Amino acid sequence: MGASSVACSRLPEFAMNRPLVVIYAAIVLDAVGIGLIFPILPALLQDVTHAENVATYIGIMAALYATMQFVFAPVLGSLSDRLGRRPVLLISLAGAAINYLFLAFAPSLWLLLLGRAIAGLTSANVSVATAYITDISPEQSRARRFGLLNAMFGAGFIIGPILGGALGDYWLRLPFIAAAVLNAGNLLLAYFVLPESRTPTHEKIDLAALNPLRPLRWVLTMKSLLPIIAIFFLLSATGEAYGVAWALWGTDTFGWNGLWIGLSLGTFGVCQTLAQAFLPGPAVKLVGERCTILAGIAGVSVALVIMAFATQSWVVFAIMPIFALGGIGAPALQSLATRQVDESLQGQFQGVLASVVSLASIAAPLGFSGVYFLVREQWPGAVWLSVIVIYALAIPVVLGLRLGKPETSTAA
Image (cartoon, rainbow, N blue to C red; front, top):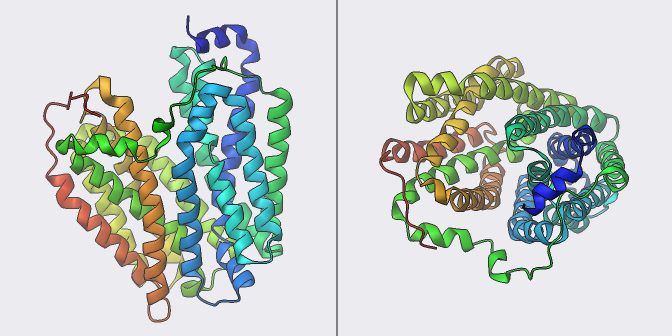
């Protein structure tokens, strides 16, 4: 019997609800914190740097967070296997609370950057929460509990921008204080209530396994996987544009305040959640995975063209269902990706995809922030046309995918 099975047997079924509440609360707060910063980050950076065009600073902060996450995620994952899930989750919650305190009170740019670096370094909430749920859940309950975990993240990401915008209009630093208090409360709850789910091991950590670039070396030995890797990179990169440019564009084009920025992001979150919940399955059945991916790209590209030329803010809300249609492509792409390799290599392949997404999260914010910095004075909406260019690069790769026999080589 494995360590996780032993740990699971020690937690009676009626006692599992309490740990799950703490885990789900951590996920909701993590998503709230991510969404909360979007509406007010431009105003905060303007207040700290006294610069009018802060697009470059936003890109740097996003890339810094992603870089720290990319480098230290393998370390935290290994520590959670060796020391247990609970201490790593506590470290992560403490890091989030410290980050928000930095954002709330930092008088200078370097302190803001230090806070984001700490947050990226300790951002293991989702991965550790997933491992924790796996530890305490019987196999037949895992799908339902993981589905609820995704729903909690979605709900938090809808609430976050609206809350951040509303509080930020009252006082620019208030959303960060609220987030710090909530994360500190969750830290205390986890400290006093959350039991350990895994028996810690005393094995030495394989230092070679902590190299975040190590999974990518495997791809070089399996050339047939490069197209799907390229698609993941390109589509992940497009998603970074909204975190960098949405609030800046809304303010510059429509004169939105924090609340309206938050409402627009929250509306998008609701529409995309509904689209991802109900449309991918029927779409894949009807036209297949490849066409579903292309339909998602087409839908979001149409919306981006309209946004680029929009002069009235109501247009943005009117096209949200079309914009959210892009969400159907991600589940279809994930399904298609799983068929590119044999079952025995799925774990290794998913590790590669996670690394690719992380690299896109580092490079794309710098690129899109640079584009917005250049186009802001003449035409802020032009940034959305740059996103379409990235989508256009992905289309021939999607069309050229070979859907044959999955790879079975175990080369590393």
